Image 1 (cartoon, rainbow, N blue to C red):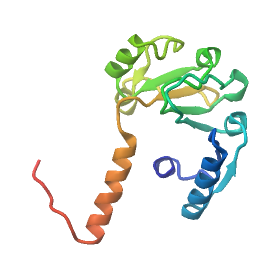
Image 2: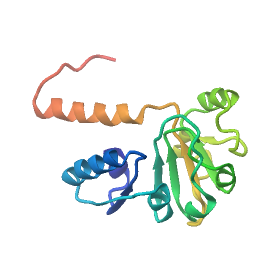
Image 3: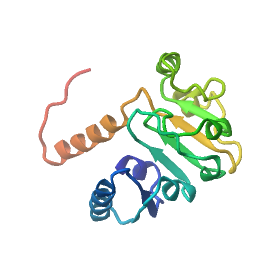
Image 4: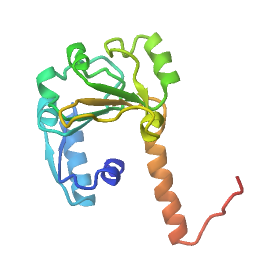
Amino acid sequence: MEAILITCPNIRRVFAFDVAPENTRKFVKEMSNKFSLEIIPATRQKEAVVNSDIVITAGALVENRVIEVEWFKEGALACLVDFDVMWKPETLQIVDKYYVDDVAQYKYFKDKGFFRDVPGMPSELDMLINRKTKGRGTYKERIIFLNIGLALEDIAVAHKIYDKALKNDIGVILPL
């Protein structure tokens, strides 16, 4: 949650869902105490997806293809931390643009049977950042980012540890 709020600070409302309702309740309570957001516990996956501009899926790597075409609205961005196991094939087919953090890892996992319904070859995130590939062309485009290689959570945690070390004047700066 913290990483997405750093990059999208104007988020005001979050829908949270877990197949275990107790996990949803815990998440809502913890995040409500930590951030000034309206966090709504969803009782079904559809509730968490249908009105969201940003959809993040992070389930177990077991096929549970539930996300329907009608749920993924125009202009939305989805970040799939769990490969593509929650997305119905027809939903993956309507996406306008795909990006990955590591094309080599994407190809490896595609050969293992994942991403079989993702059309074409996604662009790599560094190409987007360096403007060597096109980003969003219209506000209606549906975009998916397949997060398979880069440990974004590690980067977010490392940044917090670094800030805390600076604040407490501890640690050693290593030569690189």
